[in-house]
Structures are given as structure tokens and as C-alpha cells.
Length: 333
Ligand code: ACO
Image 1 (cartoon, rainbow, N blue to C red):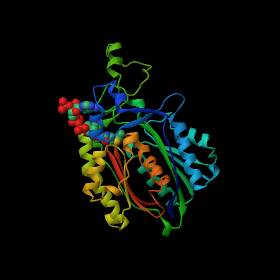
Image 2: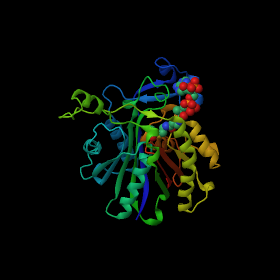
Image 3: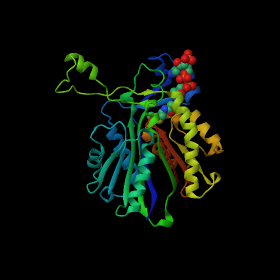
Image 4: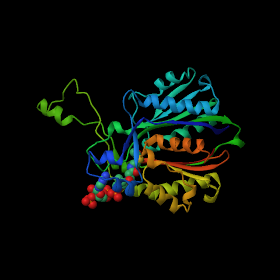
């Protein structure tokens, strides 16, 4: 059994935060951010917007494009590290979409989340029994940004994107090859840790454990930007080459390179290493910043709707980030 990609959709919050807006709250400038990252604006949740509402809007766009009814969806894979509900936001999305007959679960794999979700969907289809799977990538990293840290607050934005993956015959298979990795030795390079309150607890009880324990919360994003940058430029080209090998096609057959949108310098370095010309590289980072698990389906949706990506095109896509995790998929649109 093969998997084809039959619809995509995306949604972004209304509030636009420019580099100039950030220069009002931290010691930075439009020039520094533009030159070092390629980012000009990002969108941030505000008012009544939730991550779930963005995810539902994106998923509805994918269903509409695919002309598939909500009741025909049998699995929803919600890829997010910043859900509205820590127990998982798939259930809320299933309810709001009206996908009454769908099973759902969440995947947490930071900026690799969407590629992991896409590969997982194709494995469920290959295993049999699943026909229409919604893969949603949605993140609101603004919830965990330290707005006093100029090294991280300039990078991230909120968004959602979705893809409908449908069962088909194996000769129509849209997943041509894939490659996935994790390296926990790099886990400390990029974290949002549960706040450790043990010190506070033990001191308040003269060293004795406190019961009942205090409610935990999460710290802000902490990142060693230089190390993350080096890891990506070292590992992602190799991963794409491994996925191309599995697909049995050369780099020259790729119509589009669509990387997780983290930094324009990363996108340029990876495409240069793979010898892929810039006119085959999809980038919308300037408008949205790093939207984590949403970045790939958001950029894909824009490229499909603008007519850039055409039916039959081959796309090399790769996600990478916290974990450390990284993975690539060669897909046919
Ligand atoms: N404005 C002005 N100056 C700044 C800013 C800022 N916003 N941020 C840092 N600086 C300063 C630093 O303090 C430093 O000053 P110093 O030389 O006086 O010490 C100088 O600029 C250079 O800082 P670096 O951190 O070395 O800058 P670098 O060129 O590495 O760029 C950046 C930083 C943009 C974060 C880059 O390292 C990067 O993009 N790394 C990859 C990060 C990434 O992709 N993370 C997401 C992974 S996906 C996920 O899972 C969420």
C-alpha cells in the first residue's frame, strides 16, 4: 500500500511582530536580525486565538483541497511541542473538525515533528487499515519565549499547517524515501525544561521531601544557537542524501528543497552543500520566522496555492531541532 499527498492547508495568527517591534523591547536591530537570520516578521497568538483554532483552520484547508469529508478521516496525527493541553490536543482538534470516526494522538519532536508525523502516517497506511490521515504541524513557541533574551526571541513565530495523506496503490506511492535520527547527547543544546523546584522544596522543609509537591511549570526556551547551527549544517545534507539513496534518485531530480524554516543562512548552507540552485529552494522564513513543527506544511501550502509546486513535483524535505532530532523525506506532490 502506498501513500499520496492529496491536500494541504495552513493558518497563521493575525498579530504581526516586526523586527522593529522587537528592537523596542530588546537590544537588537532590523539589520542584525535580517542579516543573521533572514527573518523580517513573525506572527504571534493573541486575543481568542489558540493553537487548536489554527490547527483546525489548517486541517479544514487540507480537507477542502483533497475534497475529503471530515467523517472519512480515520487518523489525526497532531505534531506539536506546545499544545493547548499537555495531555494532548488531538482530541480537541478531532472534536472541532467533526472527525467523529478518527483515532488521534500527539507527537512531540520539536522542529522535526512534522517530518516524523508524515513518515508515521505513511507507516500506518502501509500497515493497512488506514485510508485518510491528517498530519498537522502546529506550534506556538511564543508561549515559551523569554522576551528579554535577544538571542532567541527574534527567531520564533506561531502557526499551523496540515497535510492529508491518503492510501493508494504502491506504484503511486508519494513517499519515495526517508531517513530519521536522534542524538540525545545534544539534548542540552535546545530545551524548554520543566522548572525544577526541588531546591525550593527541600529548603522549605529542612531537607525533607515536601508532600504534596508544588505545581510545576516550564522554563523558557534555552538554546546554544551556534551549536544547533553547526549540527544542522553537518547532519541535514547527509540525511537528505540518505533519503535520496533510498528513493534511488539523484539530487538533480529534486524539483524543490523544502527545509524546516529556522534560519536563511542554514537554508543557504544546506542547499549549497547539496548543490541545489536557489531557484529550487522554498523559503517563507522572512514572513513567519521559525514556526517549529508548522514551518514545513505552512511553506508547502503557500507554494502549492501559489502554483510554484505542481502535481508530480519531487520535494526533498527535512526537519531538525531539539532532541536533537532530524529527518528527511523525499515526497511527490
Ligand atoms: N541582536 C543583536 N545582537 C545580538 C542578537 C540580537 N538579536 N543576538 C545575539 N547578538 C550578539 C551576541 O550577543 C554576540 O555579541 P558578542 O560578539 O558581543 O558576544 C553576537 O551578536 C554574535 O552572537 P552569536 O550568537 O554568535 O550569533 P550567530 O551568528 O550565531 O547567530 C543565531 C545567532 C541567529 C541564533 C544563530 O546561531 C542560529 O540561527 N542558530 C540556529 C538556531 C536554530 O535554528 N534553532 C532552532 C532549531 S529548531 C527547534 O527545534 C526549535
